[in-house]
Length: 144
Ligand code: ZN
Image (tube, rainbow, N blue to C red; front, side, top):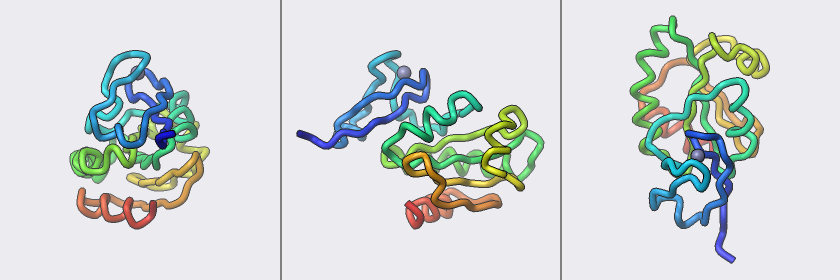
């Protein structure tokens, strides 16, 4: 039996079961047909957060940010670049703490931007403050 992983679709939030050795081959969602890995962070909401963080067999890195936060805006393209580098071994995602306040409160986000790394639905590392793409990639790899 080939090793398989549960990966959540960034478009429709359906959980797909995929052979681990096919993750880098541009798999598409069995439900909506969109690409499972599009090279961009996934925008999460309070309702989709646990679908991704709780059901993904790969680590999920969440950027907690807000539109009024200057350092968050500076980090956004860096995080985007890190997503392109880290997929498909990791899922990168963003959560707007101004719109999705329940999740931000649940994880006690005190400053933004804050990166939180989740594995099997549990927080394993967190890092407040803006980072460049290379530092994001290094931090994720060191903690996953
Ligand atoms: Zn889908």
